[in-house]
Image 1 (cartoon, rainbow, N blue to C red):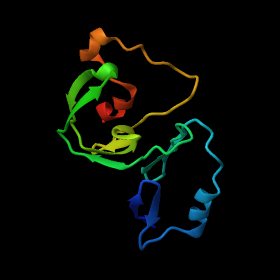
Image 2 (cartoon, one colour):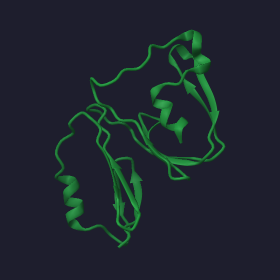
Image 3 (cartoon, helix red, strand yellow):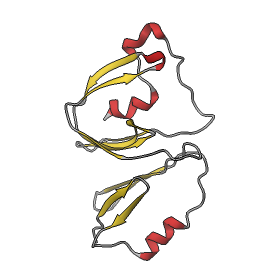
Image 4 (cartoon, rainbow, N blue to C red):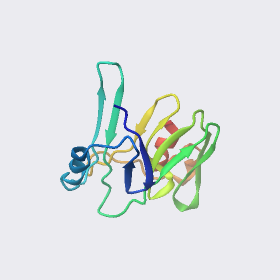
Length: 150
């Protein structure tokens, strides 16, 4: 059975007339507390369909996430420290994504060709290159990476 959802606000999705089972709703309410690291899964069905899911735990605060729809051909500029502008690009594909803190920071998204990309936070793993104000034309911040890939 196909389940359809409509997004009412950034913190919950309600089933439409097709409805979701009480067990599915109960499972989300009884989920363990956030562990401070993002989790993602991808499943492939025997019918060749793919299911992708993830969590976003970037601190103990409201991320003000929203559903963002960006059309193909949209122009972007990466925002850098010190009020600098980084690389400029035009999106080849339209995409839908979930924003993190600001509408231009996409934490997870999928483009119209089916490419899925996401930022995952694992405290203590990995690092970013230090900002070089002399190389802004070749610079992009981590929070712009998903928009750039999609």
